[in-house]
Length: 171
Image 1 (tube, rainbow, N blue to C red):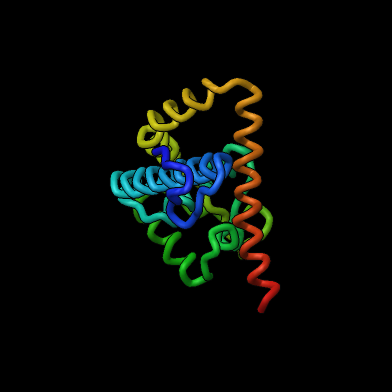
Image 2 (cartoon, rainbow, N blue to C red):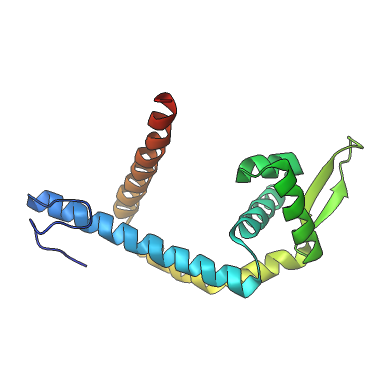
C-alpha cells in the first residue's frame, strides 16, 4: 500500500520522500499487526480458548521446554492477571485438559503448573503451518536485511514502551 508523498497517511504527513517511505513502513507494520490479530482470533476460536488462556499456555510450554517450573504467582505476574482471575484461568485450563496442577517438590503449600503432553501437539497442529510460512519469509532475508529489520522492530518496541514510562513519570 504505497501512498503519494504529501497526501498523508493515517496520522502522518508525508512532506518529503523520506517521510513518505517512513509512512509506508508504518502502514505496512499496521497492516501486519491487523493480520496477526485476525490470525490470533482464528487460532483462539479453533482451539476454543481466550487470548489470556492462549498466552498462558504458550508461556507454560516455553517454560517446560526450558526445564523451568512455573507457579500461579509467576504466571499471573507474566500475564498481568490478578490472583482471583488467575485461579479462574487455571481452573478453566485444567478443565479443558491443557494444563495440570502438580505439588511443588520442596514447598508443600505451592503448586506448579505444567502443560499436558497433548497441549504442545495441539498448539503445533494449529499454528505449525503458519509458523512454517513465517520462517520461510524470514529465512528469505539476507543477514544484513534481517539485522536491519530486527534493529527496526526493537527500536519500535522501545519507542512504544517509552510511552508507558513517560505516562508513569507524569503521574
